[in-house]
Length: 329
Image (cartoon, rainbow, N blue to C red):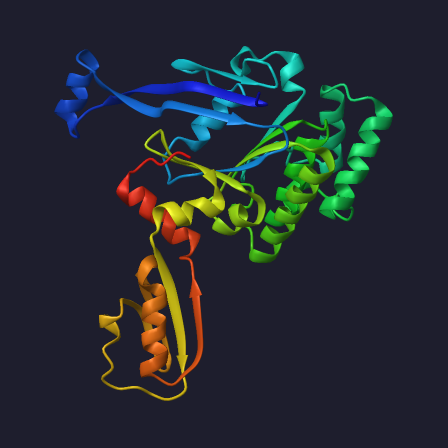
């Protein structure tokens, strides 16, 4: 039995639409047209305690809408869901004390006060016992390395410092389930790595169940063993990260580094030429042809180095979206 269980969950929005121009504006006062937008369309999930699940999809795919329903911020149009045994949209106090949601660049902190003041208010709102709250705060401050910014006014913090404070305030009540919506959005590469390290350590120390959305594939590959791909409100893939490439990208990437310049060799006969710069050539070939193509290249050319790899996960995800195919384990 999962800690998060979702069955045929749907969310439909009624959106007003009209043509441009003054005449259309006047007509819309009396005869307004609407269309139905299916943001989430009959999705089902079963997530076990302690799992870190990557929830991927393009803009408008339904990721944030799903997280808002699971956190209780939105009521679904149809379907069922339980998180920690609670129906999220009932907004029961016992449920809200055990979850948290972090949305990239959406502040929970008071910008005119030091971060520490917001932390203390949060502990009071959640009625966290004093000793437990102090212990949680000390642990988070150490893990996030924010001891030097606690007394600074929030508006003076850098984006990275503020994002770490946002994560800190969201976790002070030690939630069992985290919904992380683009937690590294807009951060530089160094800060992204630090946030990933923290999420990994928090999951290891507390056994928290985490659903993570991100457009940065490095977030997903660093943290998630399981991914769910959603597009147009429907799940296209749900399974291990390693399976996605094997199931949906039936090709390999062959990269060769030649000892000498080669003119006139028909690399395109071997496969699709992804890149050709001087003595470095990258080919994309069918998975079943990879061994034969490599042998032919080694026989025909003076090769200094050769590597055979699965395609980048970004390319695999892009192929999923382009094909619109659903593949469930």
